[in-house]
Image 1 (tube, rainbow, N blue to C red):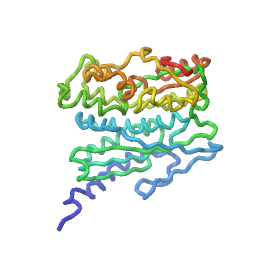
Image 2: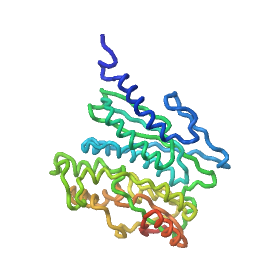
Image 3: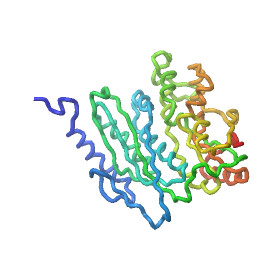
Image 4: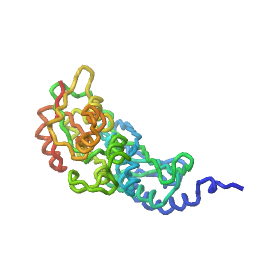
Length: 332
């Protein structure tokens, strides 16, 4: 006789883990949540009194091979927070308000401490943004993932007033590109970063501290949490023509997505100091500058595109959020 547990999937363990985590998930619920977790679908009621033409905005993403750094460091709560913040930023730059989030966690062998830490990060980010973690999926797949490995992805749903959609159509010649600092790599470029800094030929060992990184280890520098720009974007919206969330593809690759046809942009990469982690990657890996620019955010996690007349408003509002925007380029 062969059972599902013999095949490597322990349903009882998964049920017990869910029961222990349920109160944590429920702590994120907002007034729009209609049903408790555990149903076949997640239910959310939109408050139509707030909107004239509510338009739903969705995004799905993961944190890539940043999870491998989490495994090396034995730190798992930060990647959960990364995931939520990344997805929030993706819809916030469109003018949307996030409503709820759904996560997907897949692993070779379910370990409560790991899934519990990841859930803690997910919940922390959701509560910080005031959104509900309304549902998700946990999958134990021993033949697909080796023991100790896991992957993480998530989907976010938000809403924006139809006339308030920010899509770059207002961008004009002469607009200024303002760069808002990132905390580091955020959630992109980790395959290259890991190969250079954590690969078998890197010459570095886990836990090694670097003066160049302010005394941090490589793992600590690589695991810095993906910043959530939602509060800043909310306050800046009425003063700008577009936002770009800098993810895979770098500053130019992402900003180009909101530049109308017929216009071009230029970025001056000498206008800001790159965080030390990027210099370490480039120097130790002898990575060409072209690859650095196409792979990493290089210290700029959000680009704000606005007319020159909005400069004082942008600087004033950003200062309230402890941000120091840098003029990194322009539209022509």
